[in-house]
Amino acid sequence: MKPYQQKFIEQAIQVEALCFGEFTLKSGRVSPYFFNAGKFASGGSLSALSRCYADAIVDSGLEFDVLFGPAYKGIPLAAATACALAEHHGRDLPFVYNRKEAKDHGEGGVLVGGPLKGRVLIIDDVITAGTAIREAIAMIEGAGAEVAGVAIGLDRQERGQGARSAIQELEAEQGLQVVSIVGLENIVQYLHNNREDKELLNKITAYREQYAV
Ligand code: OMP
Image (cartoon, rainbow, N blue to C red; front, side):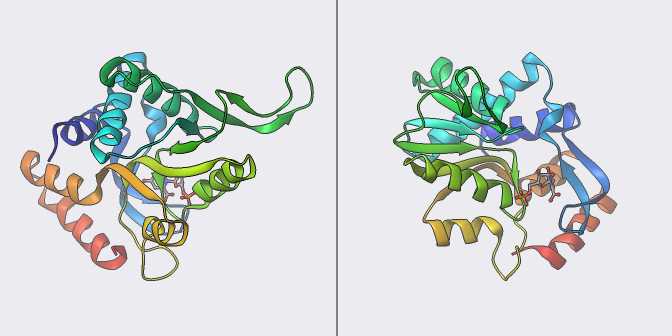
């Protein structure tokens, strides 16, 4: 595992963004784990998280001009990742995000922040069916910009509607590169190395057998 992957999992467990138990997902699947990026709710934890995003993005070699954070959870992630890219990688890039409700006064519109133009990298927490990401893609293309890729924290590596995962569908249909800090396989590896919890690993294995791509 790369250092930023190990760090991401440790931090996520520490702030309880990564939880183990029984969780019903949007898809109706009952999962033995859940990732909630909203738990990175302090300056220190968000700063550490954004450093993992920045490291994974730079490691991927993806080229882009601006970061886009879809409302709501993508907003602090894009802002903090832009800070981490500037501070730790010497790349000072603009970031932009959307409102869910268009503003009809003042500067108006749904977009806030840097110009939405050129190659855009979408920053979000997790992709399950890909609904939120598809909305962001429509918004970016509607503004005349090009989607360069998507960066997320966790790839659950599950089947979407068909035999492929939502991420594989996005990569194939839209020609996008999706960068994830970790996949479920990294979490399994971490649990193997750090926790004596056979029952949890068995539950995750059973879940993967049922839903993994
Ligand atoms: P899509 O828009 O279908 O890709 O799903 C993203 C949503 O999955 C998020 O907005 C969450 O509500 C949810 N989610 C997580 O945040 N973490 C998980 O580990 C699993 C899910 C989920 O429900 O599948």
